[in-house]
Image 1 (cartoon, rainbow, N blue to C red):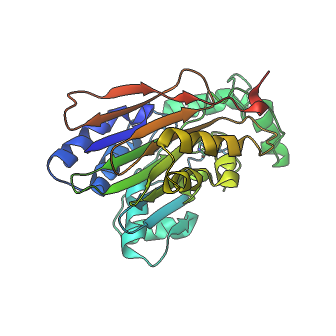
Image 2 (image 1 turned 120 degrees about the vertical axis):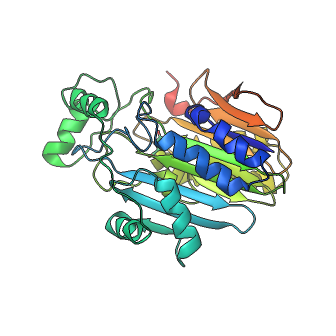
Image 3 (image 1 turned 90 degrees about the vertical axis):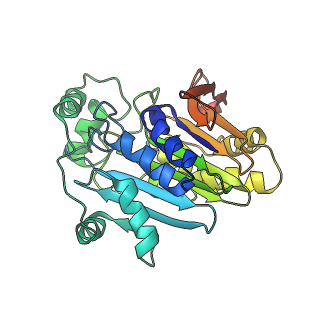
Length: 311
Ligand code: ASP
């Protein structure tokens, strides 16, 4: 039994591990862990307290994939729903679809009895406004955000990418089944309606019970163009180790020219419990617990320098 995730998954992993220890499914563990992150108002990259789009509206993307069946569910551009990961799961289980967006997803949430909530907290609103005033050092704030407001267009800009975030959780249960989940408010100051990799199966999330699971955070457009999560899992399918599969997928990403900043991070888990993390930013970690852990552990991510980021 094992549950791993991006560093901000820390608040949810004990919940997920408790489910696994009780003999629960990887699917339940992933959902529970991500729900805790979605409810954390201090995390400005996911759910409640997430940073909004350029018009000040929080729009959420999420997906979940079950390795046993490769069933998947996803929602994108959803407003006013605190737990898009649970909505993604309902899409997977109750509809003959994989991905619902915007109004349709919100309609389905209402049918499923999801409550609506104001997700823009006072703190997130303050950060958003500071960004519009150019006081936040972010790729999409300041001049770029103002340009979007006035011209509904975004200027290519390079930046460190430190402001981005999303939660990834991958779990392996006592039956040997694996599941992957991703939830995000996406890039702050994004164009309204912009969907990132977190909702795109194969890009930000992929899980195949035969080989393993991978999930991403970082520049979603890059993970979509590189089909990064799927690329990692295909590497595993070819017999590569998690380290080799991740390195290969990132080497492939390096071939994609990107006018924006090129931050990418992935976590990888195999059905036999091997795992690895990757980042294009130095000194990053991922976190996890196994059945013997009394607390959340952390491990360094393998640093992969993208040539676009070399100075
Ligand atoms: N991948 C997310 C997105 O593109 C953002 C992030 O992880 O930083 O929406």
